[in-house]
Every structure is written in structure tokens, then in C-alpha cells.
Image 1 (spheres, rainbow, N blue to C red):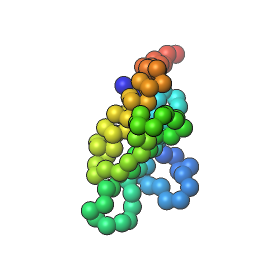
Image 2: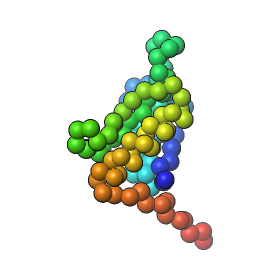
Image 3: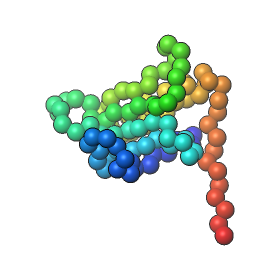
Image 4: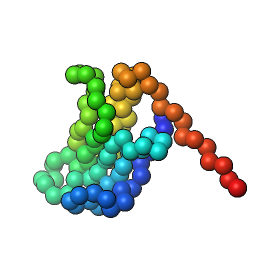
Length: 100
């Protein structure tokens, strides 16, 4: 799968931190994963969300909260694959870069 995390570049409104990532599909940002700050210790610490795509009811979950970064990545990927299947699309491998 060609989903990659890229650390957010400080372009977020509000409070972003080092645990704030854009989820990239090739060159397009398709979501976000970040660590929530504050709140009770038992609250899920990581938030994930798929952005700028829509599907019919019951096709996928577009956001959620989980305890770990690995869980957030897994939930994001699972639901992203559901959307791709519903839309009849496939993830393209990242394009190779040519060295001069």
C-alpha cells in the first residue's frame, strides 16, 4: 500500500505538535493522524481522519480515536481500502524518482 505519513509542517490551525501527520497517497494528502493533547488519561490518545472523499452510508468510517499510533494507522488503512474498493480504484505505487 502506498499510504505514507508526513510530519505536518506547522500549517495547522490551533494546536499541532510533533505527533501530527498528514497521510499521503502518492502526492495527495488524504487524511490526518495526530496525538490528542489534554483530556483524561483513559481517553483514546490518537485521532485519525480520512479527508476529502465521500462514500455511501455504511461503506466506511471516516474518523476515529484509538490508543496507539499503530492502531490509528491500521484503522485509517482499513477504511481507506474500503473507500478505494467502493470507488472502484486501486492505490498506485509511489512513482520512482530518477537520480541525475
